[in-house]
Length: 358
Ligand code: TK8
Image (tube, rainbow, N blue to C red; front, side, top):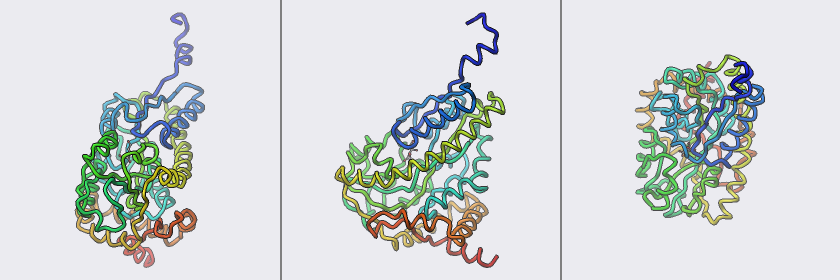
């Protein structure tokens, strides 16, 4: 090998990008990292490869993001809420009962609003390629069926490491316990916390049903995973390879979202079959919850910047006026009538008036 010209040696030796994720290899996310790797290898004629390290083996969302910033990890895909420590605007994605359906989330995150947040990352040592779906979050707990906001009282609830979420859950009567995802299963098992909240696909792929009896279909927060590359690594790649990375990440995004969405309906059936007792938060409670959170929103609107929030609500108002996602949401509503996916939130109403007056 040593006698080969450098160019030959290089083409024979692919660059391997190590990508760490918190979810398991058989989650929609894990499968989509594999798909991303296949596409990337294809578009770079085998020059770039991706190596998946799933199940939190390389750390949690916060520590893997830090490692990527330092150039010690090539890629990761944390829940975007954890990036609020770098840029507070990331919290805006996770305001409870803000997106009515997946189509709205896609339009916002893939549009100029989502892009502006990605554009803020290079100054923090990260390249944000695109948003993948984590999904609408639902609650589980080991104590009792939850079917209205009164049932939240006193329950110790694990939440993601994001101050807006901690404040929101506290305000609703829970005792919010921020923990990295990698600690959740054990914390539930030892009853250090009573409950957690995640998309149905994660509750299934992370086997939370083994340690949680009650599932509440609440769809209270939409959350996204963000595909990150260490800027230190990115800067060593040729423009052609950078382009291939973006293209592969976006194509894998569409694959991941489709897989996650298909998986959601199946996951509900599977969780029931595992013996989980399923309840739902009625539609009217969502409105009440948002009203109770006004003070929290006021605080974070200030931190995030009201301009960013208004732009978000104007865009949501525009999408609702156009009926984006309405048909999809109706078609994908779970069987039980009380598990409706669509919730009209207090704040966007104001926005509809704004949009209408344009
Ligand atoms: C996995 C996490 C997970 C998220 C959470 O690393 O922390 O609850 O929903 O998907 O990103």
